[in-house]
Length: 388
Image (cartoon, rainbow, N blue to C red):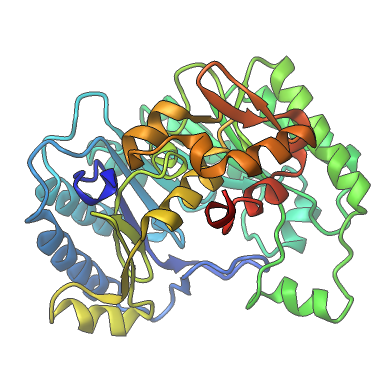
């Protein structure tokens, strides 16, 4: 299995602090007030130092800083953090992508300039909606005005590669509201948009309300129509839907996230971060102080396990089919030394006959119906190798 020998070329770094906890969020994040931020950055630097010992200089081509909200760091903290990244992951590959998640309202010009000078060259703003009422209803603390101000500051700081996240299927959201948000988003002429449907996750306020029957979600047919509208309008505006929830102008696809969708290896650092290195997945200790303490003893692992070839092949199909170009036989053969149809032929034939998959020159991709019912397609590959 190729993952057992390849050196990861991607790094994920987790900054777990937020100004507040959004009603739908189940990420490993903590409200900033009272948190030991400097001690956390010390710990993250220790983990970077321990990890970098196995990384050849110049091996990294993508870095992604997520959270939480990384931009709650002060300009001084941000400068210090990015200096650590450059110290332990120097000489990034030419044409590298260095993304940082950002929230509108936490990105003044000074901080953005520190980010740009520190090597960040791509921003991903969590906008979620251009409707003030919906923003309040989902627990976001930024305003629509904050979005425009943050994007103006980003341009002034020299950022050209900027993405925004939007969510559809929000409580009480209408198709008309979704269209209005798309109007505002498309007016910005940004190179990339990530547009996700709301998922009600456990351990969130929305899940509590859902269990009580107090979460007024749109009807399923309205949510499907929203997705149709999104796909049509993004296509008409010149964006390629290169992944189920992601739309880009040519050349602006997310390089880092494509590492995940291609089932490639990556380092994951920070509290609760996940990584996939030399055929093994790991999860870090999640709590802030437990993570800090764990880094003083070595790598802060909560769990580590080898991924067997059967599971890796399932992962390849489930994440690879999220890409609209689909999965490629040559990639499958290179990773696993087996033929795609020999392993999953029966499942592929069934999904093809159901109109969920369609053939490409080199493999298989989601058919239009499969794009709408992606989770059903992906789930079909769980355990499918056993009956292939």
